[in-house]
Length: 360
Image (cartoon, rainbow, N blue to C red; front, side, top):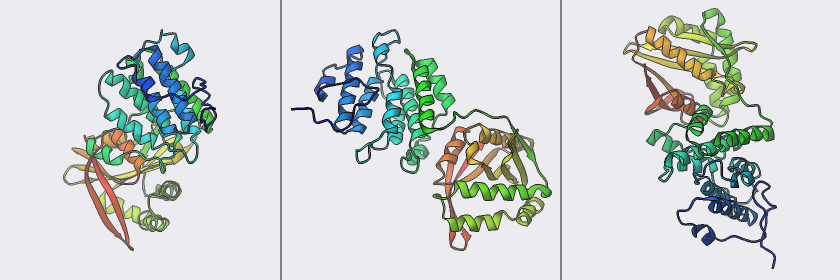
């Protein structure tokens, strides 16, 4: 009787002619050598072929638990399975359970135990990053509750590079970066590079640029987070030039444009100083096609410098609870959750936010 295979073979895993069983991997006990590593890959292929992609991921995780040095001959035949993970996520079959890989690797990285805890943690974060780049966040969200309650800070690409370089006994960094480059090629995405940024305070005469950028950015970023009606309402209330000019004159609000060479103004920010020594960021927005290039980080650093000049002890802001991308960026910049804030803004709309703060 032929094996009950459903899926065509995973092209980056070993070819097999039978179904593997759990006892074949359990027989290795604590051994994490070449035979264990190869069997993990074979069992992963078996699980893929019989229609269990989520379990296939678990077996590739087990392969990544091996601390073998890169000199082991098995790596010539079976490289570390970063690209294999990416292929699986890109080719996830409709109707076959894959779970939420992004959340899975977040939990794995933050709840890792010995042996080889640190290496395995950063291998899990490397897989998480692949999932973040491949899977739509609307369908495969991270665990925001854990992020908030446990203070989990999702790593940047640079963080992962540094830790894999420091910890890897094999060629993790090269294999992971190759998998990432291959992933971007499959998705038609460019690898994002840091860009030099200029941030400059503006006067009332340049507020029309803020209004234009606000209308463009909000209509790209906020659908799915708040309703179209609320987007229209908030833009009509807070992005009229006369309303912004009043903020300047009555509350001493600063407005600034965020500019990139050859692109011009691609974002804006505003803040005010509260009497208790808090610099409060009211607005900070960058065109979504410019995300991931260090621009938001540069803007936050600029506000930190202004906070020092203005003798503030903290920088604070509010962020919509569903704006996970912004929350991630603020956490990476050192902001921490302070409280939940829900405000009635009129016309039946509310702002349901987290207030976050960073010490100066």
